[in-house]
Amino acid sequence: MNPQVLSLAMAIVLLIAVILLLRSYVLPEKYAVLWILASIVAIVLSAWPGLLDAVSNFFGIAQPINLLFVGGFFVVLLILMQVSLELARTRDELRKVVQKVALEQEERNFKND
Image 1 (tube, rainbow, N blue to C red):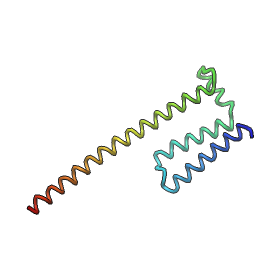
Image 2 (image 1 turned 180 degrees about the vertical axis):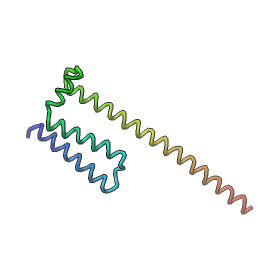
Image 3 (image 1 turned 120 degrees about the vertical axis):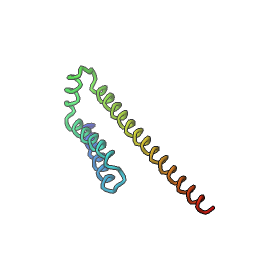
Image 4 (image 1 turned 30 degrees about the vertical axis):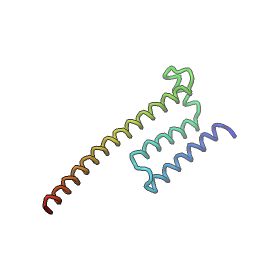
């Protein structure tokens, strides 16, 4: 099988999988946007392999695959930043809820005594 056809087929399968996960409410919308963009970029680069060569030549990168790895690295860093911010926000919300529940429980215990 031609590598171009294989990569195009895999990119299309990725796009379909993301859409199905989004429709079944498994994948939140804020993450789905990133995955849909990634799959569309993969489809475009698979359909027109010369485009990656042209972009890498524009930036002065000798090997197009290096541009792909650098781009992927920065996308992963952005995803990690987003997940870290989400985790910090969730931790703060959890702390507030636990404090509120503890105060309510303390008030109930004080009223019962």
